[in-house]
Amino acid sequence: MERKKSNLAVSVDVTKSKDFLAIIDAVGPFVCLVKTHVDIIEDFDQSLVQQLQDLSIKHDFVIFEDRKFADIGNTVALQYSSGVHKIANWSHITNAHPVPGPSIISGLSSVGLPLGRGLLLLSEMSTKGALAVGSYTQEAVRMARAHRDFVIGFIAQRTMEGIGMQENTVDKDDFLTLTPGVGLDAKGDAMGQQYRTPRQVILESGCDVIIVGRGIYGKDPGLVDEIRAQAKRYMEAGWEAYQDRVSA
Ligand code: 5FU
Image 1: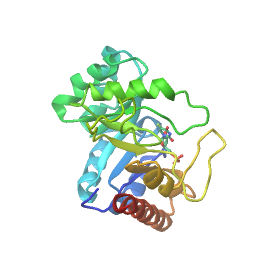
Image 2 (image 1 turned 30 degrees about the horizontal axis):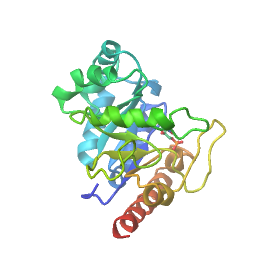
Image 3 (image 1 turned 90 degrees about the horizontal axis):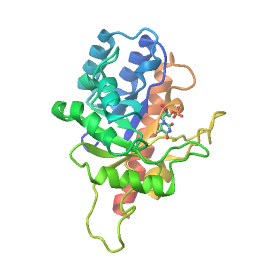
């Protein structure tokens, strides 16, 4: 993030490999991270993974498969390592719902730790009526603190720093907060998504990384110049908000 002066992650939620790779190559210079949902790609094969890894090296970004694991330890270990997608082989970071309890972290770390991977826990969500609130969020943060070798942060709407801690605790968490539900032009979609601006997310809510999908590639995945311009716009907005936060 510091090297590229970018706290922008782009979520590339398209169904064709050709669009997927073209968008990533266009936004690559502006992002610290590319977030994927590989299970929506209709013509997925292992060569796509190779091309994604090549782009990650070319543009210097981290790959995050937004798999949202949510099952027992044994099952998530198999889902992470095996099947069609073999996520652990190529995704630097993945994420999990804390709903099954700490065993989901043990299951995933049995695969991911030896490969040097990292995990994000979903302690909150961006959607209207999300149930990940209150004591659920607090317990998610406790689970993360108990597994600092593998959990590197959260998907959340605000920083999780200090949540569930006794007052006056000096211990600093140093977890990352990556935040979806970010848009400069829209307030939401027809399916419950809610958007806030990079300034609200980074400066007011203390998050680290903005995750932007349709705000960047939304109009037409073929309009590469427009996608590049939007990526630059969000990168500048995100970084400016971060600089304002750290200098405040
Ligand atoms: F965990 C979450 C969440 O709380 N909200 C989200 O929107 C994940 N997401 C993902 O971020 C979602 O699956 C999409 O891939 C992306 C947001 O895309 P958008 O096009 O910017 O709405």
